[in-house]
Length: 307
Image 1: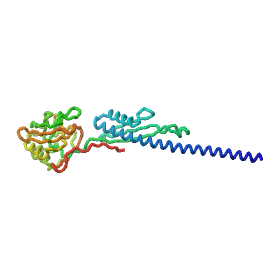
Image 2: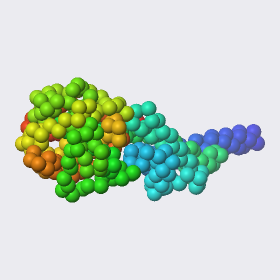
Image 3: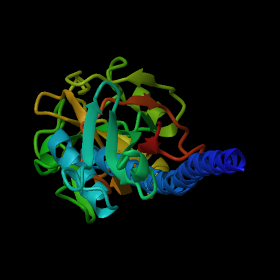
Image 4: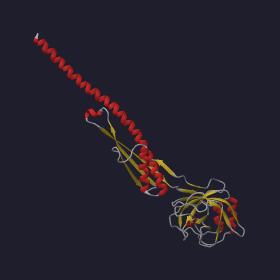
């Protein structure tokens, strides 16, 4: 009888051990389910914060041209979405690649505080997310106007001085000599004669060229080109178009968008209009566009997630 009772006691002990092991396993599975779900939810929110921070940082660089302010913008947006660098173990890293426009890569790392997995000594799990946003200036100008403006028509930050109807007149010089001056151009593709520039205005001359910073695009011949004012009035009145901006030596410095109201070929010889956008220092290709065949515009700004 004693031997039988000892056997039952041993079996009861074995069942207790098996139950304890099974309970630990059940707790482990429950912990994985609960904490795993929490990690998934955190990762989703964290990825959203990372994406928004990267886009904001790329856009900030596009506007301000500063990696410092771009970095600050990324961390501000990240914090607004619940992940502040240096708080509660979170870190926010920001990197810039300026080889083609600007690519901003934001990384956010933050611990997930476990509930059930603590039983196994795993108090936290690290969650890491990254995102890369690409931003850039327009890469092409369609139907660019065949006249150039002085960089002095803009403030130092690129803001135009003339945003209401203004008369811009030619001084017969190769390059604009005042903020209100213009000069004719064919973007360095040959002699700037009336016939050639007229073909650009009407869209019968196709120009396909990429301008480099510092490239001379002035007239070279000091021509007044009286007939061109009439052509501008006929073909370009009411149109918005990209126009080149030059320095004091007639060298390409960037772009802006200009609205042509009209032009006067009489004694005043003026083009009337105003600037629609700020001056942008960007290297662009130019493509001709028929006067009535397609819109004249700068290419679309790039701002998108690429990773």
